[in-house]
Every structure is written in structure tokens, then in C-alpha cells.
Length: 347
Image (cartoon, rainbow, N blue to C red; front, side, top):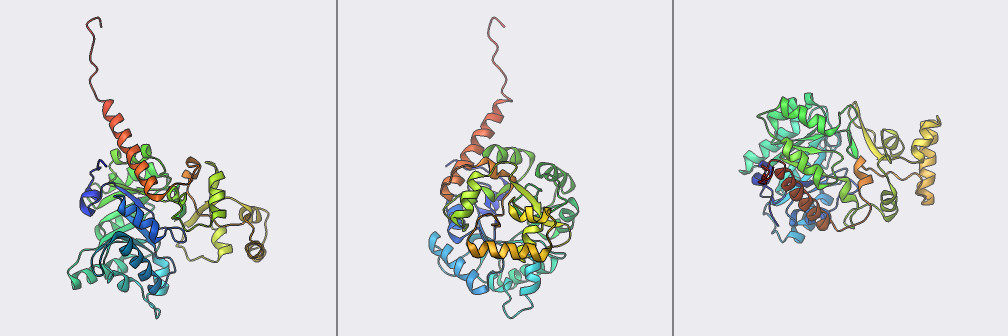
């Protein structure tokens, strides 16, 4: 496979600048291993997982990739800041224990102050003579300027992204351009939000992104943790199927997000309940009853606007190869726009 060369691929030894998003309740060790084995950077989301469970997932990835214990794992692990705020003072602090597993990268998002966790990574690296690559996800120029001096790579997430993000974030192409201008000589910058095709990736790379984060497209794979009922809904979704709201967190009892943050998910009866003016207690009751009955009308299915661009399930490795080849094809087509036409003798 022809490699695409960016600052990110050179730094992390990748063949393609495609990163799978660290999606809690969706990414799996199998998905991450498949992405890494195919030349990208696989990720898993820590979510609320215990240290023991996270270590078990990392071991599965080691086994799948044939990497011995103690050796660096070409993997990024995503931590949600407000969950770290709860777990790190508890009897199961996770960050330093997971750093001991030697992942290539750590990804931080969603906290009023991620700096203290970034400092912990730097201190751990200094103590052990390592260099862990640090991603910080941002949804505004102000956040990009704040964390640029502290990280290796900014993940610039537009409002098209599935799952959680800054509710005030501009569309991804606009935000990426703004951050590139605001941080012209800082850390690497990768784009996230609504990216489901190779032509989109090619456009972002030519804008100056060092890589891209793909989430929703990898939901359409057998390696995704989503139940078949959720995947069936995804396959029927169109470009207008998603909505940004806190309604799903309300009924799922996962509210801890920083101000001006919410989540993008497939629109369903959870939103109908909200729009009908039902109280929070009534909405939670309807959600719990629906889950107990095994209904699909109130499933929480996090997904981005790109959901409508995919209509079939494929293996994770095949998705990555397809995106990579589409990207190369588009980049080559763009180069042809600069070719000087050969004039005929009769011109």
C-alpha cells in the first residue's frame, strides 16, 4: 500500500494519517488492533472502565499485534477529563497505571482543566525515560490556544462529530482553518467531525491537517461494540438523522460534561419525549421501560452527520484501506488540476 506522508505519520510510524476515534461503548480492542495493523492509529476509549478492564483490553491488542509485554503498544487511549476527575482520587486511579502499559499515545478531552493530567504524563515519562504522544481534543480556537503549548497534537473537533463535543463549535472545516491560522507553528493538528470518505480526508490534508479522526464510519463494522439493533438503525439513517442535545445523557444518567458541551446521536423517541414537554423523571421512566422491553425506539446511538454516507457493514481493515485508497485517488486527481495542458497544433 502506498503510504501518505504527513508530520503525524512520520512521528508515529504510520502508513496512513487515519486515526480511529476513541469511542466509549463502541471502540473495541479488535477495532483498534485492526486499524493499527492496517497502517493507521487505533484507539480505545477508557470511559468508565476500571484499570483491570483497560489492562485486559490492552493485552488483547498486544496479542492481536504480536507485541510482547513491556514493549510499546501502537495505540492511543482516550480519557474523558471529568471522569478522570472522579476516578483519580478514588481507590482505582487509572492514568498512571495505564501509562505503565506503555501506549504510544494518550488522548485527553472534556474537562475544565486537562493541564494537571498532561503534567502527570510528562512526569511519568521523565521518570521512566519515555515520550508518550499527547493528543488534546478542542472545539474552539480559545481551547486550541490554551493547550497548544502543552501537547503534541490538537484534535480539532467540529460540530458534525458524533458523540460528545463543544455545542458551540463551528463546522469542522471552518474551525480547522481558524485553528491553523491561530496556531501556525505549534503542535500538529488533526481534524475530527463528520469525516466518512476519502475525498474529505484529502481536502483536510491539503488544508494543513496532519491527520484525521474517523469515528462514525467505523461503527459500520463487525468489530464495533454496538449491538446489531443499533447497527440496523445506523444502516437506515440519512444525513438528517442526528441531533445535538443533552437529552440522551439525561435519560442515560451520564451527565458530567463541561458547560457548553453535549452529544450528537440518532434522533428517536427520546427527543420526542423532550419535545412533548415531559419532565426528566417521566423521560427517564419511559427510557428505562423501553430498555427493559428490548425496544429500539429509545436506543442511545451516538453518531455523526456522516452516518448518512455509509450504507453497508465492512470489516474495519477494509474500511481503513478503502478510505486510504480514496484519499490517494483524490490527491492525485487534485494534482492533475495543476498540470499544464498540452496545446495541439491547431489550437
